[in-house]
Amino acid sequence: MYKITKEFHFSSGHRVHCQKLNGVLSEGADTACKFVHGHNYIATVNVESKKLHNHMVLDFKNLSFIKTFVDDYLDHKFIIDINDPIFNRMVGNVNLIPTEFMGVKIGSVIDLGVSENEEREYLQSFFVVDFVPTSENLVVYLQNIVSKIINNEINELNLKVSFSLSETPKTSATYYG
Image (cartoon, rainbow, N blue to C red; front, side, top):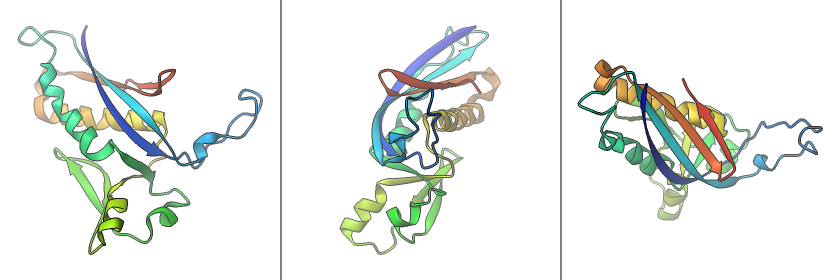
């Protein structure tokens, strides 16, 4: 098995609205992740193949679309679950526009309508998903999107995609799909 790896860095905010901790294992049951906060994420994509194609798994440049996706939808955004109990308090009563990237549904952005400049800038800072944006859920989300795009474009290579996502230098989540 051959594998290539590429990292993508981005800064995003989130809130884990439903987190519960085991008080014994965590030295207390309170969690800081219920608060609005952010991370400097490192997303690492791994692309594997049983054989080489033109002497490589895939050209690293073929992964450039991931940087475009991350820069356009995740970097310097607040990733918010539409089911978060404070969703309406944070963004108000807004219309959502389902959004696709390279033919794959990725989430929603807020319809800016006739918003004033300051409100427009605020509302543009949100990226709406339909899951709690934990590291575990975000890594599955990234893996699913990237796998669909790669398989839509070059499915004849039978590539396997996996992702790791690091919130801090000491923590990460991995999904193999």
